[in-house]
Image 1 (tube, one colour):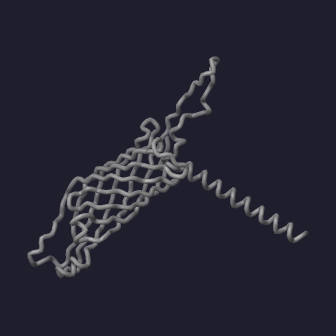
Image 2 (image 1 turned 30 degrees about the vertical axis):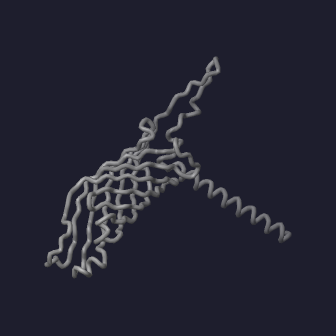
Image 3 (image 1 turned 135 degrees about the vertical axis):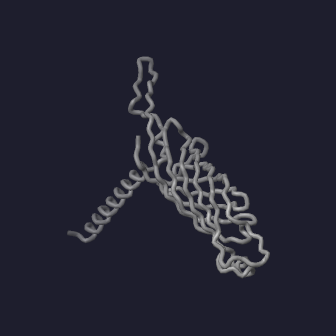
Length: 229
């Protein structure tokens, strides 16, 4: 066999295999995307043209329950940033997507944040540890914006949350001087943000108003279907 012809055939075979694999992966990820437009579109297969040339369309109502673990980084804002550094945030979210509710997606959120103490603050106050921990649970509303912001690559989403937050502190050693610092607290927090969905992945930026514990969060979230209906 001619070596040039053999190399050419091998190149075509490898290219075909890679292209087919990429196409299959794209279709799989697309089918799992909980904000995929096809879940909310009318079923074209059920369109029947009448005698007058008009179309009779039957819409299919579909939906599903999804679980979305998340991880990210939070930055303390305002006075909170004077004594705390950026910290890790992780959590999970249960989401209900249903075509009749489109473009609204309702969810239940759990999040845990930990902000280590600012080095300058802890040193100047003779502290070895000053951690602020925030545990939050609450509800969420995602509004899919593809009708207003068109994109073939991502799905833009407006994110709103109302959560109950329990805030605790780990301080060591306990301050013995006249240092005045915020103590433990329980409060309602309000979050607004914008995110972009790429298949099963969400990338988002959110601002949470939490009185003196307000923070800005950048987060990655992965959506997995629990069941569909």
